[in-house]
Image (cartoon, rainbow, N blue to C red; front, side):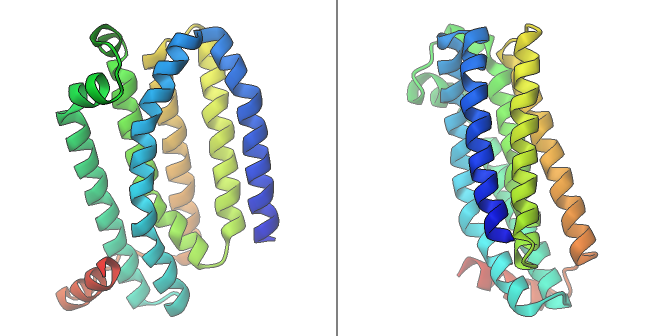
Length: 219
């Protein structure tokens, strides 16, 4: 079941992208799409960071089951991802001009006219990063098909909002806001599902147990 949903999600997401991207380019033009694609690089870098810090939650919760020890691991892991998200957004905002103009090679004029696209994408990817903790909880409980379903819903909402926005004349800044909304929806769905399947998981226990969890997740 998990494998089927995983494959179906991959195929479905690919189809959605194949249909949506040409329509998107047709409405906003190749130049603006190029800017959009370059901005997305920054967000994707954020998601690469999350991979190594959400996997310990999957490992320890799957081994320990629903328990106080697992709740501590989830809470500590959530704090780690939240800290990384905060650090990422501080650095990305502090060095925004250098990242956009020097690294991405986007002109000052285009950057100034689409600065809110950059900001909305940063906020969006912070929600996606922190939400990896909830995704990890669901995966640890061997409900991977649900995370696959959530991912497909996210893709549908993501591209659906973008296409509706472009059809009604939204600029890149407005599209950034729509992407933020799609990320927030995914975040809330993942949080609600993890809470429903696992139960309350915000539990830090003693300082000793938090230090132990932090050490094993960072080792």
